[in-house]
Figure 1 (cartoon, rainbow, N blue to C red):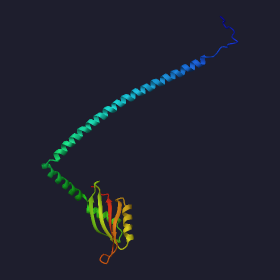
Figure 2 (cartoon, helix red, strand yellow; figure 1 turned 120 degrees about the vertical axis):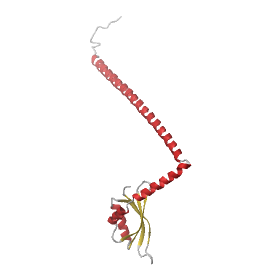
Figure 3 (cartoon, helix red, strand yellow; figure 1 turned 60 degrees about the vertical axis):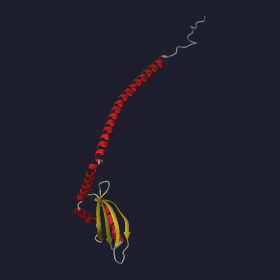
Figure 4 (cartoon, rainbow, N blue to C red; figure 1 turned 30 degrees about the horizontal axis):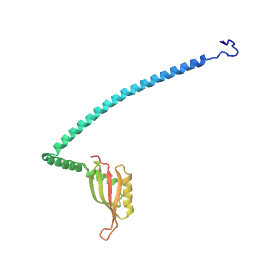
Length: 188
């Protein structure tokens, strides 16, 4: 058995720094693992709370939908159909009555050029509960009607002005006529 004693052939190695840095990195990795595990557990608990809220809201939606279906069934009964139709008619009449002619004409007067005549005006309430004006206007020149459309577009009281149809002057009607549709910002 040969025991090497000669230190010159195998010098002393410095492994302590390497071991200490390995231990430090291992401890850092263990702390990071513990942090990640705590984040996963926290996320699970929050997810459980969200799932509970979601199931509670879904049951509330189902309850409201069943209540709505029950009420719709009551409204569809023959004895209630007449009352429903009457209430719809009254609501439509109230919307029509809520349109102020004075306010419409005052606001149109601010945008109407002197050379344009409003020949016909019909306000109605569209699906979005906004007032839309359906007008028939006439003018000596086509440019006056275009100026009127520009004035409507630049006004903050009107928007989405369009002229879907127009007619040239005839012997019986000496004016350029145009149909103008515009949304009006009157509150109902």
